[in-house]
Image (cartoon, rainbow, N blue to C red; front, side, top):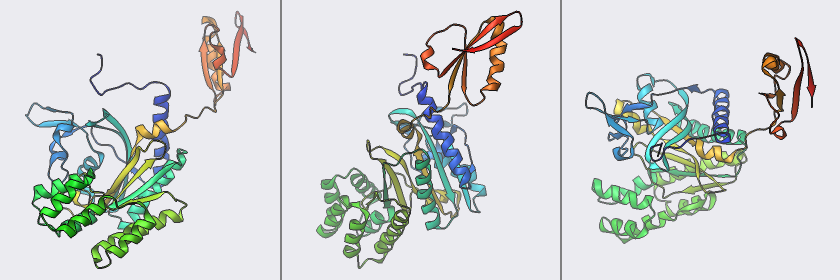
Length: 375
C-alpha cells in the first residue's frame, strides 16, 4: 500500500550484512589496484536499448523527460561504465563499482551489485584476474561453498555457421539453447541444416559438468575443428589456473549462450551450493565498445550483493555496554565513550532489556560529584 510493487525496505541486520558486503568488496579491490567509479542512476534509455547492448525497454523503469526523450533508472553497470569511459579507454584500466540496478524482470525492481571492469588487458590476464578476484572476495566474506562455471560464446557462434539462418532464426535457436529446449533446438537446426548438425546442437545442450571429463570428450569430438579446439584450450587454461589455486568445484557449460549481444568470448558464473543461486556472473564483452567506434579488450564481473548478504554473518565481537544516566548525567555518559572507544555504548534513562548488554554502568551521585558503578 505504501510502496510500489517490487520495492522493499531493509532493516537491522539485513542492512548490516549488506554494508559488510560493500565494505569487504571495497577493501579487496583497493588492495588489487582498482579505481572506483560511479555513474548516474538516471540514464537515457537508448544507452541500453541500442543494437550493441540489446536490453528490452519493457524491463526498465522509465519515463519521458520534458524534451520527450525516454529516461530510465540504470539497468546495467557495464554499459553505463562503458559510456562513461569511452573517451578515455585507450590505456589499461581496472574499475570497481557498487550500487543498484533497476529491472522489472527480477524479484523486485532493485538489485544491489558490486563488480569490476577490466579494460585493455591481455585476455588471459584479465579473465584470470576476474576469477582470482572473485575467489579473494568470497574468501574474505567466508563463503567457500560455491561452484565456478566456465563457458564461451564462440562455440554456439562457430557451429551456427554451418546453418543457413536468418537473423530471426538465429535468435530463435539461441533462445531455445538458452532454455535448453531440445526439441526446438533440433527442429530449427534440422530445418536449416541436416540431421548431423541438429544432433550436434542437441548434444551441446547437455555438454555441461566436470570440466576435465567434458573438455576431454569434446577435444576428441572436435579434433578437426581448429576454432573449437582453441576455445576448449582457453577454457582449459583458466580451469587449470583455478585448480592451481586450490579450486576444485569447476564445471563447464559448452552449450551456454550469451544473454546480451555484447558478450564476445569467455563467460563465467558462480553458484552457491546451498541454494543454487547465482552469486556472480560476467565475461568478455569486446563488442560493446564498437558503438563508440573503438576496438577495446574488455572483461567484467558482477556480484549479486543481495545474495551474498544472505550468506554472511555480521560480526558480533564488539562488547556492548549500557550506561544508565539521568538528565543531569547525560554529558558524563557521553564522556564515557572515550573510555570505551572500541565498544558499542548505548545510553539509557531506565533499566530495561539489560540482558542484551555485556556490561551495564550506572552513574551515581549529584551536585557535580558522580561515580560510575558497574552493575
